[in-house]
Length: 254
Image (cartoon, rainbow, N blue to C red):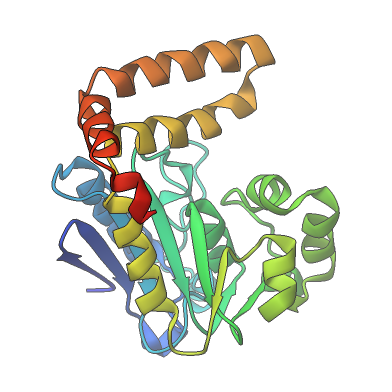
């Protein structure tokens, strides 16, 4: 299987495992990724997903060898409707996702990492629009998400030059949310996932969704939608429990 699905106390761990092609994604792998994220989405016992690449690299993007060979069963999908070329990049999940990045997250691999809510990267990991070198466009939201994540100027720097960034530069851009030493990205991402999963999930999820859906709205519409999401969170009853924990002095523990 090109994608492994494991769980760890409320955390879904999705592992890309195609070492012979640096975890590049062909059509079956894209389909497997979509199925795995939908499985995560529909499992009430799971709160956060961590996406990681096996064998020390995150993802090299679309499988160029499969594209060149032209096997219709393996060539990356290019349909306007349905899932994205490398899989889940057109989905808007209701739960948080974290990319644990070692090695290269380039081309479509960078687009998947950008689709995730947060990115924990090793200092020597390399992120970039390497597909620029082969005349291949970004088609999994890269031109949109990079611009929204790191600003237009930084995004164009990556999109136009195709250069790779890592370490402090990736952190300064906002491309990486956390930097860790090489080999520690997965452990750090799992720790971050557990931290998020420990919170009452109603407000985590509605606040997260509000931050996404507001992009297509004017201010008044976005504020109204935030209010509606907030009312959904209040209806879960988690706020009452939270207030009791606060009153008991739990806030002193940070």
